[in-house]
Image (cartoon, rainbow, N blue to C red; front, side, top):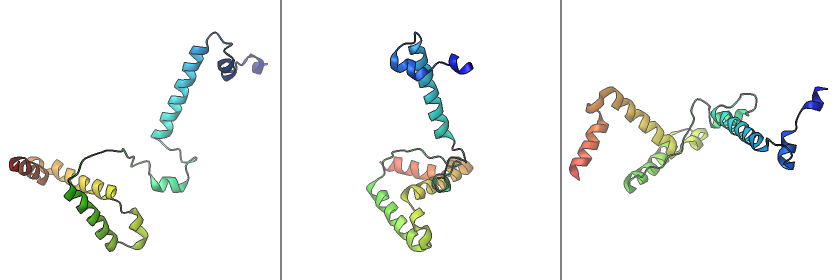
Length: 133
């Protein structure tokens, strides 16, 4: 009996028979948007494969960022990746990336800056670089 009273929103949208089609469409859009947000924010353990969880753990979400590096630093970063690959076990070579190196280097530099403030190497090098130009 209750099934007869249910309204098929998709049917109404496609046929245009509902007076509230615009309201229903916006409700559907909000639902889709809300569902998309929750999927990107957290991955339910039941729906993700263990392979996906290993590649991108929930605890370490990533954001894409573009920063300009000097040609010298860019080349040094490639060299560092190659040298690190020579030092590590062959099983972990595929996990060594320039992004991982930059992320770890920034983590170390920012930690030191947080601890030492204006006496940190970061501030000293930035000021030295500014005064040289």
